[in-house]
Length: 341
Image (tube, rainbow, N blue to C red):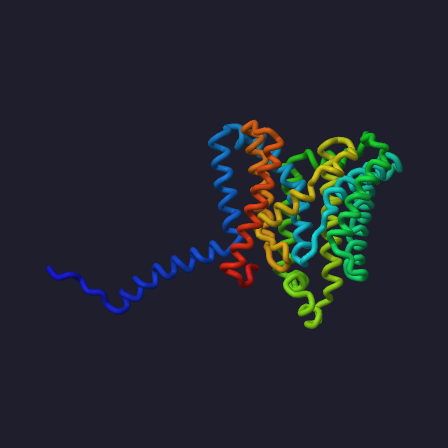
């Protein structure tokens, strides 16, 4: 019996198969979102097999509320990072926003919806201030947002004299504690924010201009892009979303607590963005990766809690994850380079 012979077409197909597989593998490795999504799956399976309460409905609902808090902050933070900036004020501003909402509602008698609208407007004004300082006076983003963070902590304490504000309108609890079926309302708000951010960044000219500003601000300016306006808009988005998080927090707690302003949410937001593939140099990153990064951090944080790991080690784990993400980002940029959007 003679051995079968390969026609030229068969030989070409055989050679093309490994090449196609290698090309696909290379694309997956070069894509930050693929790695973090896979990490989410692995983390969920690992913690679910180690702690049976981890995948219970009640625990998933808790994770949904936690995810909404720093996940929304991460989305807002990512807008600023995409332009090559940084916003360290989001944690402090979220804490102050909760105090302002409670102060407007309880102390000044504003209806809940009006208090929420006034709070978001104040936060948007803070973002506009950041953009003005960065654009007009060339103040480093790190400096001006750190100043705002410090001021927010001080204002939260001075307005309340260190005492939580009680007697809030029911609308705050409705936003934070109610469900749509088995899904917490905050989790749905997070999904809505992600979808809106995805549409803005990836389906509009404004989004493409934001990426262009982060990639090369001078080239974007010469191309006719209003760079200052785009940078300011990212700070407004970041600060407004921080205000939204503050409102969700007081609804969950039932009081406007000034201690929230120093909780360190800004570090978690930055970590989620970087873990999700946003480059700290600007111009690179997608909302899919950012959302996955926030989900991964929540999976790890809640998983360590389910395994009764000391809370101090949870902070260490978060720092390790951030460090690994930054290292992976630099290695990926060195070996694969190119546009990762």
